[in-house]
Every structure is written in C-alpha cells, then in structure tokens.
Image (cartoon, rainbow, N blue to C red; front, side):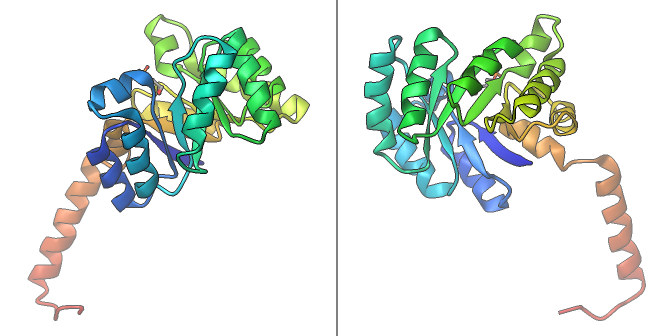
Length: 218
Ligand code: G3P
C-alpha cells in the first residue's frame, strides 16, 4: 500500500521525507491557501523533497480552463499529477489528459457511480472522501469496498486513493478494503506508529539492559 501525505506544509513534508515512508503528496486549494505560499513555488519545493506523485489541483471550472492550467502545472515536473474535480467538465478534462498520458487524480468522489465514470475517463487515481462521508453519517469505508469490487470486475487500472482520512482506523480499514493508496494528514501518519505498550516496553528493555551492565554494542 502506498502512503501519501495530504498536506501543503513544507515542514511536514520535510519530516515525512526524512522518515522515508512517504510515497507521494496530495494538495488541494484549501491546503495551499493555508500554506500561505505561491502555488507554483510550493510545488517546485515539494517535487524536490518527495520523488513521487504530487497532486496539484486545478481551479478552473470549464474543461478548457482546466486543460490550460494542467499544461502549466505539468511543466513544473514530470511527477505532477493533475487533480480534477468530479464534475462533467472535470471528467472531460480527465479524458483529454489521459489521452496525452498525463497523470490525473479525480477528486471529491462521494459515490461509486462517480468512481466508475472517472475510471472510464482513464483517471490514474480516484479520491473517495471517507471522512466527509462519515461526517454526514454515511459509511465512507463502504464506498471504498464498492469501488474496489467495481474496478476488479472490469479490470480498471485506476488506483483507489482513500482521502479525507481522519484517524488510524481509516488507514487500517482502507488497507483491508483494498485501497491502493491512502493519503493522510501528518497527525494520522504520526499516530499510526504510536502505541503506549511500545513506549512502555522500550523503557523496560532499556532498564533491564542497564541493570545487566552490558558492554556498549558499538
Ligand atoms: O485532499 C483531499 C482530502 O484529503 C481532504 O480531507 O479532511 O478536508 O476532508 P478533509
């Protein structure tokens, strides 16, 4: 399973690059706005830090505007993935970019029919928003399972990128449900490797080691 960081914060991206488990980054207009940076300068920095797919979202509303923006964004680096909204115009742009072998991430997916359409348009990734469905008392994880079944039934190569991840259980459930990628905010990725028994166990190992007066290992 691939792990992407859902962030436009360069400090967070640097930390994840150091940790070595970050396969890519997803951004969206809200995250970019929060960063306070110029979008293109930000993307130029991110591609230097993470040698994997970096999703950059268009803000145009017509296919023609989206394609013009996609052209500019794609020139920044070959790892840039064009993120498009799941609208008829977004799907039109997706089809055109797929025909030119430009990678796409179709975002704001809330039902399986939308994911089917994105796959038909050749999307590289589909982004179902798990947390936002849970927020309105719908079952976000059921959506991942439905998309997995549909894509398997027809052999669609579009990768399922579980997004809007709120907590570690979303990551585990996405993995169990067959998502190809999970994109997490920093706090979820950090929480994934934390367990009180790990900390407690380590303290007691160190104490026992000291008591035994062992020579240093190195
Ligand atoms: O990047 C898209 C997605 O992950 C947004 O998450 O937490 O704003 O619902 P959230």
